Length: 459
Image 1 (cartoon, rainbow, N blue to C red):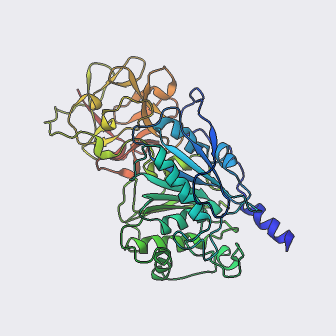
Image 2: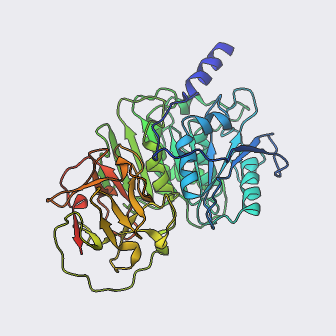
Image 3: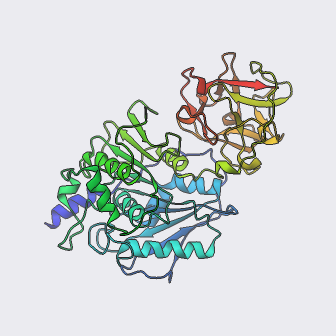
């Protein structure tokens, strides 16, 4: 039995994958992972760690980042969760990292106490951590989010079901539906669920989540779900069961409103809202086992969770008559850059001048946060001293503003077909998911000639 338990825990332990850097390399920050004691009610003796970047946003988001079995706060912080840390340095949000201290370092998502709000198990201690952070920092209550891997993904589902009035969104990598791991004998392992053999209707899964917070009638968090098709530790059928649960909690059909393939081995489905911040989003990774997240995936989670800058409503949108359109050419004055597919302009949210602010589409109004100029060096500048900057070289790399420093990730080719191509990556400036609405984020993506990759420069 001991040998079997060891094998299961070893399988659940995600490798500390050295993921590719989410954002271009910058000087290391002085901020460090810090342990907090005496944070409040903590019935299962969890440890609390917090990461507060050197530059905290005026109204920061709060991410609860939950580790896998046999893991720790420092392991996820320095390992396959580090892209969340790098982004916190950019966007000024705070990260709370719970740490399980029981043998095996798994989180309790199984006992009756764990599966009810304020029930007195791990979720109770984690919510004490959230309250502690909220009391000490000016946290935006509308941007408290949760993400986790494996055991942490299971806890992500549980927290979102038990505290839907606290969390606005979650991103679960290789998890199971909330309540799927329930046991009555004190064990923290449910073989029927882990094997993908616990199949229920969407209504049954939804009711199981609703029972964790009886009487609640408000909205539930948006949910992003990731799973590898060859996962045998928390078997792939759990992915479909998670989608059933969260679509039911949102009153949605299980038929996707949108399907695409951000990478050749990925199938992404969206339910309800089909924007970057969809109501429910599932990403299935073909041929991959229990080893998520892989390189580049957290970038998608950051955008989904709304951690990448200010909210879209912060951008001004007065009505201005646009100037005549021309094909973009390098050099020669400044002007707006309008998406052919959307009719909206590349915009710096809230007219921010902060390095790392991710650009978006917004109604064209011609103010300074939408006026771009190209230089002979291939830069595309805003405000005169901030460059359009690619935060990576792969599909999904964020597009942001950053102080101009001459790197190839800040140089662009403006092509005659309307595409704008990164010199370093060879990828095209792309409106995420083919989005056309206000707040749609921009990214790098393989050039395909679609209208969401074509731009008109109005000088």
